[in-house]
Length: 291
Image (tube, rainbow, N blue to C red):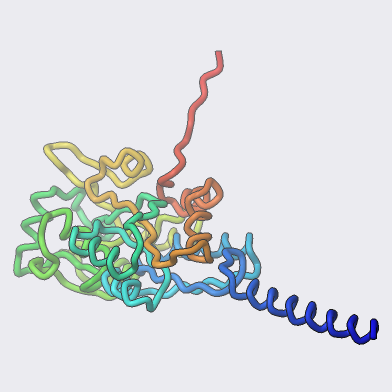
């Protein structure tokens, strides 16, 4: 009788343990599982670097980076086709409201880096700088002297927002891809390329070095003063086309998306941002004077 009772108890315990294991497997986890991140091509490099760092720290995670135009990626996030996307432009009040209603989360952008939109010309171009007035006039001209990487792109959206215009109201040429703009710009000596700084910001990367050698980055003149997209220009945000990159997610629990966001904003993630040649958003260099 006792033996029969023991068998029954062991069977019940086994079922309970299996049940608990199944529940544990289904519970949220930031350190294992799959995640797809949507990012505009302009800041794909820093996103990939952060993803690589996260996967090194958490080998059971598998992160896939998918390149998609900024506006389309935001729409996919709202439709629950993706859990996380990288953004650069400010959302309109209507977009923020739609996000909060459809995602059922408070709009809390996770800012992690200062990047920039830069204006480039061939290395042998006599042009040394460009003014805000030239940019405004050029984007209203039928000559379409400015080359962007496409419609719905982060670069076009950001410049339009900075000029307080709608992207559809601007006149421009298109060469798909930031890198392609640099490589083909020599064929159009009178044109000006508009690209994301992260395209070639990595200091010691061979591809970045090659691309930097092909073009000249123009300082932007505002009120008689020139501003550059160097580290100081990004850190102090004096360069007029400095933009802050941030993550948006529709994940309500602490799963991989939120784990990745937290990692990217910690000192380790911010060091990766710095190695990408961008300005970390959450850490700054500190100088200590010893007396």
